[in-house]
Image (tube, rainbow, N blue to C red):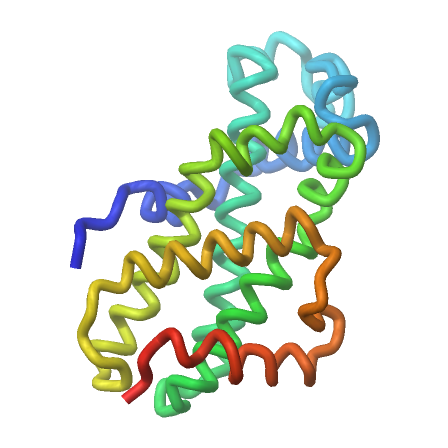
Length: 210
Protein backbone atom coordinates (compact mmCIF):
# COMPACT_ATOMS: atom_id res chain seq x y z
CA UNK A 1 0.00 0.00 0.00
CA UNK A 2 1.27 3.45 -0.91
CA UNK A 3 2.34 5.69 1.94
CA UNK A 4 -0.57 7.71 3.29
CA UNK A 5 -0.24 11.46 3.46
CA UNK A 6 -0.11 13.22 6.81
CA UNK A 7 -3.25 15.33 6.52
CA UNK A 8 -5.62 12.76 8.07
CA UNK A 9 -3.51 12.37 11.27
CA UNK A 10 -3.21 16.16 11.41
CA UNK A 11 -7.00 16.54 11.29
CA UNK A 12 -7.53 13.83 13.89
CA UNK A 13 -4.94 15.39 16.16
CA UNK A 14 -6.22 18.96 15.84
CA UNK A 15 -8.54 18.97 18.86
CA UNK A 16 -10.27 19.29 21.15
CA UNK A 17 -9.62 22.97 21.71
CA UNK A 18 -9.22 24.63 25.08
CA UNK A 19 -12.21 26.60 26.35
CA UNK A 20 -11.09 29.97 25.04
CA UNK A 21 -10.12 28.65 21.63
CA UNK A 22 -13.44 26.85 21.37
CA UNK A 23 -15.28 30.12 22.13
CA UNK A 24 -13.38 31.91 19.37
CA UNK A 25 -14.00 29.20 16.78
CA UNK A 26 -17.67 28.95 17.77
CA UNK A 27 -17.99 32.72 17.37
CA UNK A 28 -16.21 32.69 14.01
CA UNK A 29 -18.39 29.89 12.68
CA UNK A 30 -21.60 31.65 13.70
CA UNK A 31 -20.38 34.89 12.13
CA UNK A 32 -19.47 33.08 8.90
CA UNK A 33 -22.94 31.50 8.82
CA UNK A 34 -24.65 34.85 9.46
CA UNK A 35 -22.57 37.16 7.28
CA UNK A 36 -20.37 34.99 5.09
CA UNK A 37 -16.59 35.01 5.18
CA UNK A 38 -16.01 38.23 3.23
CA UNK A 39 -18.27 40.35 5.44
CA UNK A 40 -17.07 38.90 8.75
CA UNK A 41 -14.50 41.06 10.49
CA UNK A 42 -12.11 40.17 13.27
CA UNK A 43 -13.92 42.82 15.34
CA UNK A 44 -17.18 40.91 14.96
CA UNK A 45 -15.56 37.60 15.94
CA UNK A 46 -13.97 39.21 19.01
CA UNK A 47 -17.32 40.72 20.02
CA UNK A 48 -19.15 37.43 19.66
CA UNK A 49 -16.40 35.55 21.46
CA UNK A 50 -16.43 37.97 24.38
CA UNK A 51 -12.74 38.90 24.18
CA UNK A 52 -10.68 41.88 23.18
CA UNK A 53 -9.47 42.35 19.63
CA UNK A 54 -5.88 42.28 20.89
CA UNK A 55 -6.46 38.89 22.52
CA UNK A 56 -7.96 37.54 19.29
CA UNK A 57 -4.95 38.71 17.31
CA UNK A 58 -2.62 37.05 19.82
CA UNK A 59 -4.32 33.75 19.02
CA UNK A 60 -4.74 34.30 15.28
CA UNK A 61 -2.41 36.65 13.44
CA UNK A 62 -5.02 37.44 10.82
CA UNK A 63 -8.36 36.52 9.35
CA UNK A 64 -6.85 33.90 7.05
CA UNK A 65 -5.41 32.07 10.05
CA UNK A 66 -8.82 32.10 11.68
CA UNK A 67 -10.48 30.79 8.53
CA UNK A 68 -7.94 27.96 8.36
CA UNK A 69 -8.58 27.08 12.01
CA UNK A 70 -12.34 26.94 11.42
CA UNK A 71 -11.79 24.82 8.31
CA UNK A 72 -9.54 22.39 10.18
CA UNK A 73 -12.10 22.11 12.95
CA UNK A 74 -14.87 21.45 10.42
CA UNK A 75 -12.77 18.70 8.86
CA UNK A 76 -12.11 17.14 12.27
CA UNK A 77 -15.79 17.19 13.14
CA UNK A 78 -16.63 15.55 9.80
CA UNK A 79 -14.10 12.78 10.44
CA UNK A 80 -15.32 12.34 14.03
CA UNK A 81 -18.95 12.13 12.90
CA UNK A 82 -18.15 9.54 10.24
CA UNK A 83 -16.04 7.58 12.74
CA UNK A 84 -18.99 7.52 15.14
CA UNK A 85 -21.42 6.30 12.48
CA UNK A 86 -19.06 3.67 11.09
CA UNK A 87 -17.31 2.35 14.18
CA UNK A 88 -19.74 2.62 17.08
CA UNK A 89 -23.10 1.30 15.82
CA UNK A 90 -21.65 -1.48 13.68
CA UNK A 91 -20.35 -4.72 15.10
CA UNK A 92 -17.00 -5.51 13.51
CA UNK A 93 -18.53 -8.89 12.63
CA UNK A 94 -20.91 -7.08 10.26
CA UNK A 95 -20.44 -7.95 6.63
CA UNK A 96 -18.20 -5.87 4.41
CA UNK A 97 -21.31 -4.95 2.40
CA UNK A 98 -23.03 -3.45 5.45
CA UNK A 99 -19.95 -1.55 6.62
CA UNK A 100 -19.32 -0.11 3.15
CA UNK A 101 -22.95 0.95 2.81
CA UNK A 102 -22.91 2.75 6.17
CA UNK A 103 -19.62 4.46 5.31
CA UNK A 104 -20.85 5.63 1.90
CA UNK A 105 -24.04 7.10 3.32
CA UNK A 106 -22.18 8.69 6.25
CA UNK A 107 -19.74 10.34 3.83
CA UNK A 108 -22.56 11.81 1.74
CA UNK A 109 -24.56 12.95 4.74
CA UNK A 110 -21.50 14.59 6.29
CA UNK A 111 -20.66 16.58 3.17
CA UNK A 112 -24.22 17.48 2.19
CA UNK A 113 -25.24 18.34 5.73
CA UNK A 114 -22.38 20.72 6.48
CA UNK A 115 -23.99 24.10 7.19
CA UNK A 116 -20.93 26.21 6.46
CA UNK A 117 -20.19 24.47 3.17
CA UNK A 118 -23.81 24.78 2.08
CA UNK A 119 -23.91 28.47 3.02
CA UNK A 120 -20.72 29.33 1.18
CA UNK A 121 -21.68 27.38 -1.95
CA UNK A 122 -24.89 29.41 -2.17
CA UNK A 123 -23.62 32.88 -1.26
CA UNK A 124 -19.84 32.98 -1.76
CA UNK A 125 -18.98 30.23 -4.25
CA UNK A 126 -16.05 32.27 -5.55
CA UNK A 127 -14.35 31.83 -2.17
CA UNK A 128 -14.95 28.15 -1.51
CA UNK A 129 -15.09 26.54 -4.96
CA UNK A 130 -11.38 26.89 -5.81
CA UNK A 131 -10.53 24.95 -2.64
CA UNK A 132 -12.92 22.17 -3.67
CA UNK A 133 -11.98 22.01 -7.36
CA UNK A 134 -8.75 23.21 -8.98
CA UNK A 135 -7.09 23.67 -5.56
CA UNK A 136 -8.99 20.79 -3.97
CA UNK A 137 -6.13 18.30 -3.61
CA UNK A 138 -6.11 18.47 0.24
CA UNK A 139 -9.86 17.76 0.41
CA UNK A 140 -9.54 14.82 -1.98
CA UNK A 141 -6.49 13.61 -0.06
CA UNK A 142 -8.37 13.66 3.24
CA UNK A 143 -11.31 11.66 1.90
CA UNK A 144 -9.06 9.30 -0.02
CA UNK A 145 -6.85 8.49 2.93
CA UNK A 146 -9.81 7.96 5.25
CA UNK A 147 -11.35 5.52 2.77
CA UNK A 148 -8.01 3.81 2.14
CA UNK A 149 -7.62 3.29 5.89
CA UNK A 150 -11.11 1.77 5.99
CA UNK A 151 -10.38 -0.56 3.07
CA UNK A 152 -7.06 -1.61 4.60
CA UNK A 153 -8.84 -2.58 7.83
CA UNK A 154 -11.35 -4.76 5.96
CA UNK A 155 -8.45 -6.35 4.07
CA UNK A 156 -6.67 -7.10 7.35
CA UNK A 157 -9.87 -8.72 8.64
CA UNK A 158 -10.02 -10.96 5.56
CA UNK A 159 -13.20 -9.37 4.20
CA UNK A 160 -11.62 -7.85 1.11
CA UNK A 161 -8.87 -9.14 -1.19
CA UNK A 162 -5.50 -7.44 -1.07
CA UNK A 163 -5.07 -4.62 -3.58
CA UNK A 164 -3.84 -1.04 -3.45
CA UNK A 165 -6.81 0.78 -1.89
CA UNK A 166 -5.76 4.30 -2.89
CA UNK A 167 -7.15 4.43 -6.47
CA UNK A 168 -10.57 3.12 -5.43
CA UNK A 169 -10.59 5.37 -2.37
CA UNK A 170 -9.78 8.42 -4.46
CA UNK A 171 -12.48 7.63 -7.01
CA UNK A 172 -15.13 7.38 -4.28
CA UNK A 173 -13.88 10.53 -2.53
CA UNK A 174 -14.08 12.46 -5.79
CA UNK A 175 -17.58 11.16 -6.50
CA UNK A 176 -18.80 12.09 -3.00
CA UNK A 177 -17.37 15.61 -3.32
CA UNK A 178 -19.01 16.02 -6.73
CA UNK A 179 -22.39 15.04 -5.27
CA UNK A 180 -21.94 17.59 -2.49
CA UNK A 181 -21.06 20.36 -4.96
CA UNK A 182 -23.72 19.49 -7.54
CA UNK A 183 -26.67 17.90 -5.72
CA UNK A 184 -28.91 17.84 -8.83
CA UNK A 185 -28.73 14.14 -9.72
CA UNK A 186 -30.77 11.05 -10.53
CA UNK A 187 -29.06 9.31 -7.59
CA UNK A 188 -31.67 9.08 -4.77
CA UNK A 189 -29.77 11.11 -2.19
CA UNK A 190 -32.86 11.96 -0.12
CA UNK A 191 -34.35 8.45 -0.02
CA UNK A 192 -32.47 6.32 2.57
CA UNK A 193 -33.84 3.01 1.31
CA UNK A 194 -33.15 3.77 -2.35
CA UNK A 195 -29.71 5.13 -1.47
CA UNK A 196 -28.80 1.87 0.26
CA UNK A 197 -29.92 -0.01 -2.85
CA UNK A 198 -27.79 2.31 -4.98
CA UNK A 199 -24.78 1.62 -2.78
CA UNK A 200 -25.39 -2.12 -2.99
CA UNK A 201 -25.76 -2.09 -6.79
CA UNK A 202 -23.11 0.47 -7.79
CA UNK A 203 -20.64 1.18 -4.95
CA UNK A 204 -20.08 -2.17 -3.26
CA UNK A 205 -19.01 -4.05 -6.43
CA UNK A 206 -15.99 -1.77 -6.76
CA UNK A 207 -14.59 -3.08 -3.47
CA UNK A 208 -14.19 -6.61 -4.93
CA UNK A 209 -15.71 -8.31 -1.91
CA UNK A 210 -14.57 -11.90 -1.45
